[in-house]
Image (cartoon, rainbow, N blue to C red; front, side, top):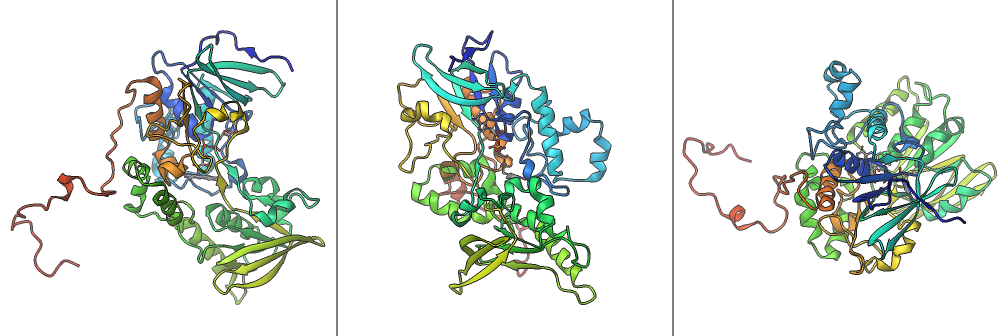
Length: 469
Ligand SMILES: Cc1cc2nc3c(=O)[nH]c(=O)nc-3n(C[C@H](O)[C@H](O)[C@H](O)COP(=O)(O)OP(=O)(O)OC[C@H]3O[C@@H](n4cnc5c(N)ncnc54)[C@H](O)[C@@H]3O)c2cc1C
């Protein structure tokens, strides 16, 4: 194999090279745009920006307000805001009258693409294949490959990983993903590519009671007509004891603030792990709106005495799965009753989430990363990964730090704030001022001032007796 070439004009190290251009590194690229003297480059393997294309269904919306765009929560004056995107597309009045806080997911994808196409620092069709520490250059060497096979090497004083997460499929289904039935056992990340085939099946089982599972089950249900005819029989299985709504109370959402992130980061590891498991409803539930739509769809089917061609089964764990004739035989366990039962189905959509994994291109510096006892990054308050002291450059991560920073790591709410934190650290100065105190909730032991009992309450403003609860 020939040595990778150095990109002309790029012999000097970049201040920052980003691997991956999902929303999180795109946010960093947008915030870094125009920062005087700061040279950055962002690389993505895809031919162009696209955001979870397998689940970009009509009618689905972002689960966070549009203000959680790429920049606004850190820099509302940025030209890369969602509102400026709307203005540049001459849709200001339409957006205003639509009164939408939660914008269509397809629109969020289009907005991000609009930004990515305009930032000179973003390069697509560039798969990073190796990351090494070049002692002579005192910089990271990042090697990337284009679709035509050309390999390029650039130097970077600092690198930020924003490579996203990988689909997770339950163990019993894994062997079926690649058998002759391909296309009928799949992860929800590939749903849209197989939608037509699934809609034509007699019966589809959706496994997983998160937002993706709900959206897939609802979408399949809607391929039936109003009387429940046509389309597949839809079975929706949840391991959890209930099809639970995602926490969306105002105070509950304060878990997605810098205050909570900072509190969480300083807890002992055992407490952090316990909390992430316990807080599943902050990131794994279904939006109340989608649950309502599912219910309304089922209700429609009962008009005139009909029965929905659907089954909703919580508390069910998939134990075994095997090909059976034209379809599949699933052995399931009701977790509360501890009893087994079987399901025959034509197709299975595994909407069972995503997990961070260690990218192969890191092998070149694998022994320089100070992994924790479970082989994960140790991430500090500036999102820097702990490295061997021989490495003078910094390596940052985005969306691989739930174990150190809590449930906000994959959430778009904190994306711009985290990107601005990294930008300030990478630039070595405050490019964007950030206040760490944003929540009303006091997380942890109160500081002296907060714990002091308030003194006199003026009689004129105190509540009359008997009105409190
Ligand atoms: C369907 C869906 C809907 C979601 N909706 C919401 C929501 O409404 N609100 C919310 O808060 N969160 C949401 N999330 C969670 C989260 O915000 C998203 O998953 C988000 O896309 C994560 O962004 P990311 O930048 O970490 O990764 P990704 O968007 O996964 O992007 C990673 C990028 O890295 C690239 N890459 C990987 N390896 C390499 C390599 N070696 N070289 C070059 N490029 C590489 C990939 O091509 C990809 O483009 C959703 C998640 C899903 C799956």
